[in-house]
Length: 448
Image (cartoon, rainbow, N blue to C red; front, side, top):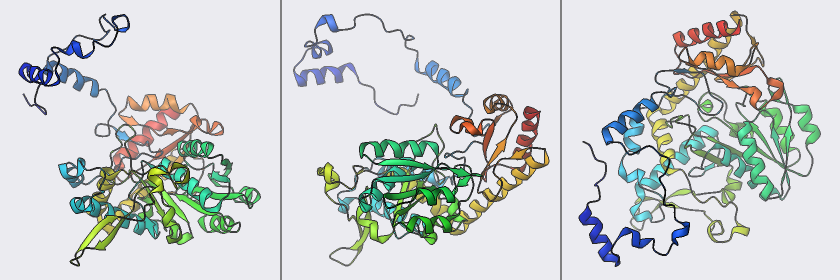
């Protein structure tokens, strides 16, 4: 039998009790009155032998619709992408998975360099000048960007596109409520931000405008026009981006974005059950002293050797909450490392090819659906997602698909009442032609 730990022996237990000066475990709880103690039997199954328990848990896990035995067309912020095998090998090393706060650079050079490389690659992808060491996830990164814009401009209103991720919008509103910042939603037209409505909503009170690129519906936003409108009122242009898409698309920095955030999940981080993730946060150099979280910089020691340290981090983020740029002082170092290893293994060419494969396969699927009589709700350029109109509830269709070994798309009616019976379909580079064809065929049967 394999043991990942050493069991506690009776001798160990007696020695520990003797050391702390008590005769039994029950004596440790003697200060708790009997009348408030629970003396009954818990309503749980009796303990099982370890081999029996392992089999039972394996049977339970086997009921899950995993991404090995099922072909997934579900995206909406969490995607099934190729992760080079080296990712797990590197992040399983104890030097990394036990590392937390690299405040002592003399013993944390490996961790600090890993974070520095992550920052560098995020800057290259986004076209921005400075990136931090990571955030909890894409949603909190976006909310932090909104708060930064309000603090920097001293304005109290945020505009966010209706075509941004619904969960990210909710996080922004939660953050804004505590800071007494108003959040207004810009309507979408044909799946992209309504430029006319944005112009009407813009005024001197707007701190920042948030758009997603590609947006929640998979569409590409008119970035040049958006930037002109946003900066005409001296507001900050905030863009939330899928970093893999930026391997093929023009980066937001080239469009004049002030802040670019997103989730690094597409690079080496498994879908799991929705987490944990790794947000990224990149800005122009003029905003670098207001970036939340940590920044790792490159320097030289007294012997001229290259070294890495935490830098440009105001102590207010730790000790003076009312003066803080942000109250997030941590980062997702292990997942940032996973993303760094994935990007390094793929290389610039590999990232570009992987992004192109997403575009090609999504458009192949879109064309196949059109040929089978389906209607694409918002037609136009997309990355790896598009909106499919169906003739009955998406939930019932997905229930039938799961019986066929297929994880269907996202039910947009959950967040957009006007898009009842619309499915957001994601097609990544891992989906084969056979899987796409089978999905279209099964959808045809469900759609009939």
